[in-house]
Image 1: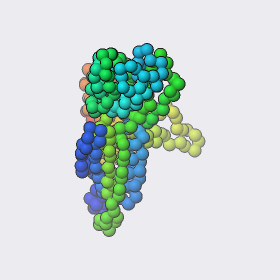
Image 2: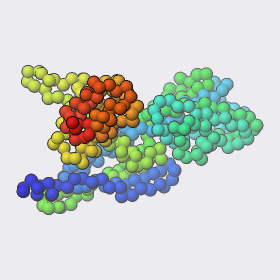
Image 3: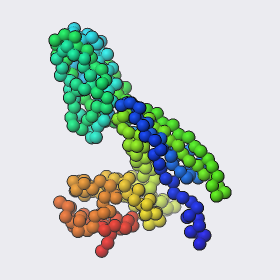
Image 4: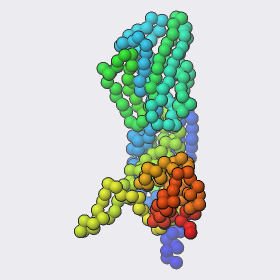
Length: 332
């Protein structure tokens, strides 16, 4: 009876999106609340998520530009108003969104006279320009502007060495930071003879990600930071079962609520489960990306996956049984 009363009085924190606003193509705003929280929890969560939002969320930038027959970034092309340096600075301002990793290529091939903007960039389907109106150059004669671009997805800042430019290839400083600013505030109130808190979180992005997407990615990154602690084994006095660099995922979930299991499983990706390369590749090809996806597969379903042998299926089912996830794959 006492346990039931405690479970009723302690409510699970709920995240709510209070406001989403697009002030311009390069300025998106989101306001969120998380409550109820116990005293001190709001500051712990707010401080951590703010740091991750500002430093760990990935963005996409142009990192190199190649111009034919140009040797120096302060060169001037007859027929173009801007210097090479000014064109590079304009390229740096372009906000991009990419759904894939790795190097991607873009290009500009324009015959003047013309005002060249971001809309004139030819890009692969996986890359999108957020604001097509960004000015690049003004061509006032009948000449051709040819620029090859390299595009990367990353995080943080890259300050390029201008001395590294060669053969007309110019490195561009990159700021892979779609989150422009983050604010959080805390409101305390009394509830049933204890102080509880509401965390208010404000996020501004440049449009490369929406505030909701940025918050999701930051939350996932924060979980990833703490996974090594969850994976580690307890070290005994005699040194047995010491912490190892090659620990398999072994977190028992029997004591966790069903809702928390679902959320947790959605955040765990199969490349974090230390399966063999063969199992990992087979699961990825079958569009199984998370622990939650995997838990929905029965033994029969797994046996149908191409190149996934019986021994591998046994290994997967044994893993699911060890972490005690109730799923078709665990049923006999």
